[in-house]
Each structure stands twice: as C-alpha cells, then as structure tokens.
View 1: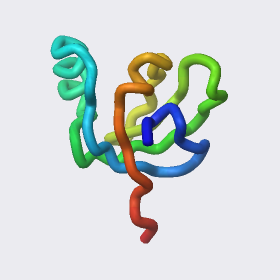
View 2: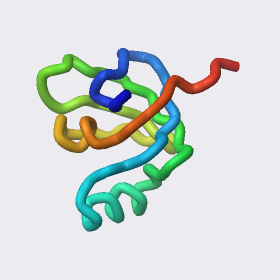
View 3: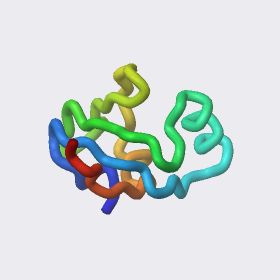
Length: 76
C-alpha cells in the first residue's frame, strides 16, 4: 500500500520509495529510508499530509506520499 492510503495515528514501515532520485536523496537526508517507521498524524486524503518520523513532524505532498510503499508496523 502507499503511504497516502494509510490511516491517521497508525505507524507504518517504509518498504520502498519510488520517486525521482534527487527527491529520494533529500528524503534519505531527512532520515526517511527503507525500514524507517513513519506515523501518520493527519491524512485527509485530499492534499498534503502530516507525518512523524525520527522524532520530527513533516508535511508531505500527495505526490510524494503516493510514491512511498509501506506496510503496517508490528504493534508492540
């Protein structure tokens, strides 16, 4: 599933990022890499979404979120 399809207040594990190389490198520099855990704080399904990873909140546009493949993280 894509990150954009995720639910509010759920945590997901990043499986892959399929976007142009320059943007992928920027996301990696911010700490968003394969295997990272990402929590959706606000996803209204229409536009940008707010997420949290590595202890920091970020706004991601729809195009970016639609190109990040995730799976539900195991709950502890």
